[in-house]
Image (cartoon, rainbow, N blue to C red):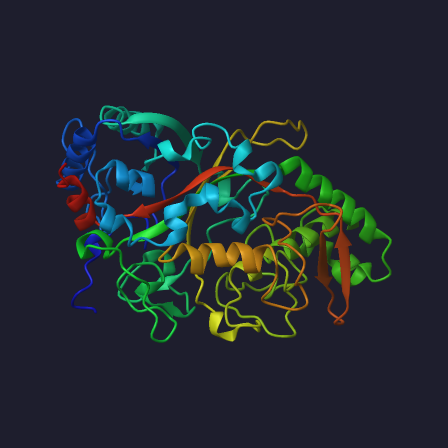
Length: 465
């Protein structure tokens, strides 16, 4: 495989991140098939004055001023003229699209597609999601203007990195990503998590499951080295989150085992200048996520956000005695080598997560109701076996552990205050059950896209008819 694997055939930002400050996602409709194909052909050939170059996964000698990539929906492949016999070889969940699969991933109630704003309210017209990454808005504008000449721009979603790499809930994000064989990633130096086979993300390679290779759509030049992306617009209710932390901390103040959660003599290890109520807020936030808000794993440092000795952010595992709750967001999405019901599923549902925040800064002293959240990409070789399985079985049903079955992820889950619950862990092996967790993240749009290889983009550009 080392001899046949070619990084230059892979679109960038799949196996390795760009680390840029801004992103602009253009939601596009193909209205002129010939113009769209010509655009793709020029983009893979190196670009020109009116067409940006597709960014490949190569090691740069000079950092480019922007990075440009595209994902194509099922309707987009059809709009470009992909023959029906080849469209029929794509998996069902991709063919149906995110809107029709909404219940499977918890998109109901206020998160249902019926409430998604334009352009995601017309999924049949969403053909391509083009993503521009850059370190300044000027390059976003320049590239977007060039793209708009070949496609009908239905909508735009702008994202940016917040200070210290955090999201609006205050957590440092993007710490742990899969590592892949045959891929050297400077961001993964010193990480000793298990290596993931290329088939976890790319079509045409073996997966972690023995004898399982996900089907490659036909023809080979279209499907091989491609992958799938669940693009999601996720609104984060920051005011509701902070209010719940206040309410939970107030409840815990009167609990007889309160001091086991936050040692009164060492509150400074949880946060400078915190009183007991403030410390308990941070403990709840840490157990909800599985990390303290500064990124320190709760598993390695359950008593301190600021431990006296440095701890690894990535090198840890879970056991039956773990202090990190089984229902924590981090542990639900990636149980690592820890105990779960289906032991064969450990590490088998890994996803590459790329994302940036959108919306205005949040000032807790002057709260407002403006929408803000995350523009997320969840990339894997099989949407059903990876993204949908994680969202349905682990995030929203808790089927990986009988102790959390029937409870949803406290951060990402489809919670309702009447039925939600979360068990906090204590060092003596006991637990404290919190209830009344509201839905903190609402889906505001999205689409399933296919991320074609460079060869596949060339194939699409050369279609005729």
